[in-house]
Every structure is written in C-alpha cells, then in structure tokens.
Image 1 (cartoon, rainbow, N blue to C red):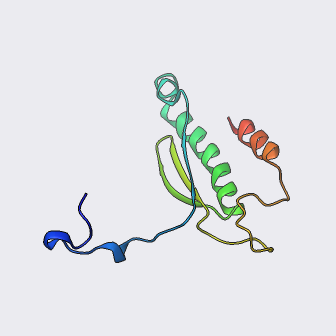
Image 2: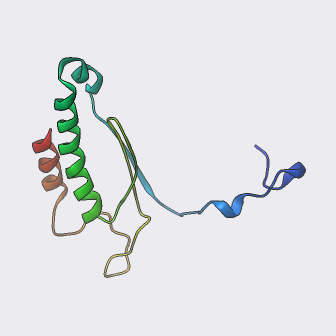
Length: 109
C-alpha cells in the first residue's frame, strides 16, 4: 500500500471522509437463489418489494443510510447521521424495542 502522494501518486485523501465509528449491516436473504428457481419472477419481485419497503421505513425512522440494494443484498450504515436529544449517538429510538423490529421483519418474511 502506497502512502498518499508517494512516488508521484496523486494525493486523493481529500476525496474520502473519515468517521470514528459506524455500524455496517450487510443483509442477504438466506435461500434466495433457491427461492428464485421455485417462484415466478413477479412473486420474487413482490417479496423483495415488501421486504425492502419495511427495511426502508426502518432506515428512515432510525436515521440510517441505505448504501446499496442489489438483488437480495441490502447494505445499511448507522452512525453517520445525527445525535439524539442528549448528545449521544443513537441507532434505535426508544419508542420501539428491538423485539418489535424483529417481529415486523418476521411478519414480512
């Protein structure tokens, strides 16, 4: 690995942001390839649309950032957005518990 600006390489460090702490979630649907072999394409699309609509709502309500969605891959980043009312970084608002989010995700699946 070369250091920025070493041996005539251009210094591109100004193009990247540094964050002290983030959380990255890589979500991959288990059995997705097998499911695609068994279901019609429209059924797969409806499944993904329903699943990712719930995920998108969670991302919005939790001030997360959806980095990428491709097929059954969903990548979300937390810790980039805001501080809570007391100045602490918060990924989950107190109005809902983790169990409530899990039940919602299981309902979709």
